[in-house]
Length: 362
Ligand SMILES: *Cc1c(COP(=O)(O)O)cnc(C)c1O
View (cartoon, rainbow, N blue to C red):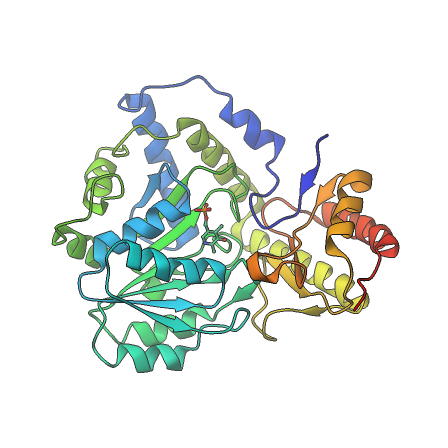
């Protein structure tokens, strides 16, 4: 049975994108590959609002999230935590043998710029990790406000995960002073999983060059050296790079501003509808994500029953809560290729399925 994903990653992939992947292989050291790689750069740089190169990593986002730590953290990293992915990033810092501090906020609360300022002011840090859009709880921190604080600490290299927000809203890498911008393929970009993108500042590259134990596969210096030749360090996922090219054409055809506006509009449509059913947003007011909504299960409905109905009768799937929020929240993605029509159809299905969903005994 085929069904459509409205979970926040992986998300539904268009037929056009899938067809783009079904192209013949080319050698990854061939002039054809160099032409393909180089043709992507201007559009990727526009999307990231950067003059720095955008490297292509054959890995999921975690590959470069871990790799970034190994490339830039010499002294100590401040890991800002407000959800499952950012919590994990602290754990990964420790597993990489890095000195790290956990700056913790409740899931659903944004990262507080003043708390970041207080920590960085101790002078203990040379790097910070931040997740712009915490997909696990639908909480979007105020990236411009956070970067305004971080920019005041020139020794601190900023590593920012935009896995579920990249291309869905403006993220001005150079203007904000983001050193390492990371995204993955299967969320906001609506590609199949397996590719990560990262854009690295000169500062971060210079730091990397001084690091003794940065490894090979995610070495920034290797990425840069190969980038200069229009290539990747090792054999990349060429099929996904074809898909990325196709997606960049789609984005250009729609127009970036229109794409941003579409995400904001569809996000609000889902929000208004679910609010009308008596639910509330889980994250703090004013910090809800634009690419997904995470709702608190304030009506105490049986979310697994809801998903069963949605899947069997409406051929779609939403998310019933991440990790410790399972059953307590539900998440609906509006990222990628959704349109007014697909969201209208989703809401119609939800209308019908919610009417049939039992409440849990409290
Ligand atoms: C999904 C996600 C990740 C992890 O991505 P993988 O592709 O599983 O490595 C990291 N950060 C955020 C914000 C995510 O949504």
